[in-house]
Length: 246
Ligand SMILES: [Zn+2]
Image 1 (cartoon, helix red, strand yellow):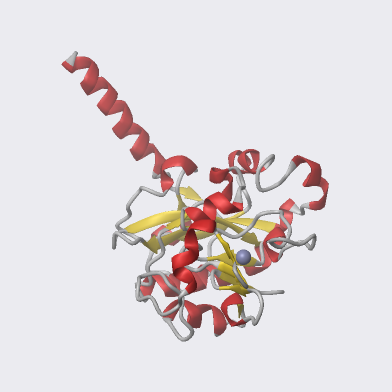
Image 2 (image 1 turned 90 degrees about the horizontal axis):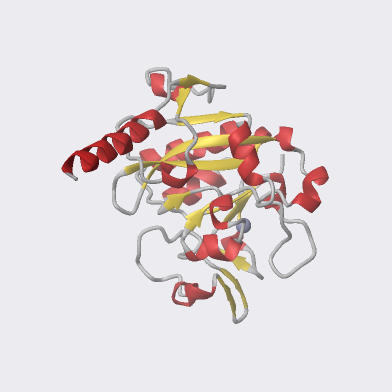
């Protein structure tokens, strides 16, 4: 029995180590040459990647790997819309972020390729400023159900979908919008709050980590690069949402 337990433990440890894969990828082309890790990425394992803590920060982007694309089709890329999505215009990012547990984690994100380098720079800055983000997972982990992803306070970007409660295509559908800590930064139209478990956070004076305020480090990282914050819209108020056209 003990022997079986040891074998299983060894398999689990091996799997974990296998995720740290020094595969060369398209470099994020930043000035940070001191960090060799920036030219490397991890083996793609969405399910557990959020829990892998890192010693050295990793910020990379590349074309969407085949195994990730397979997970996206039928989720963030609906089968009926597959012809409308320009997959070659999208990039897959690995981003190190400071979690609510004050540990570094590696997240995954899909954004428009034209914004990829800038998004990397934004999240590098956010990380260096120690701005907390609870989790950064692909929305495909939630079956591309935006409500579920928001309820879980998950930060995400690309999803081929309409703007909430409209028939207009969202900027998320082009990978040009990012929702940050969405439970703590809800989408509000009059009395409508999304996600539904975010009513408490309509009050923007709550002092809790991860709540976006005008002038904070996260806000500044986006705004100085000419992104727009939905928290400054009159109606709706979309406190989680940053977007940019290119
Ligand atoms: Zn959004």
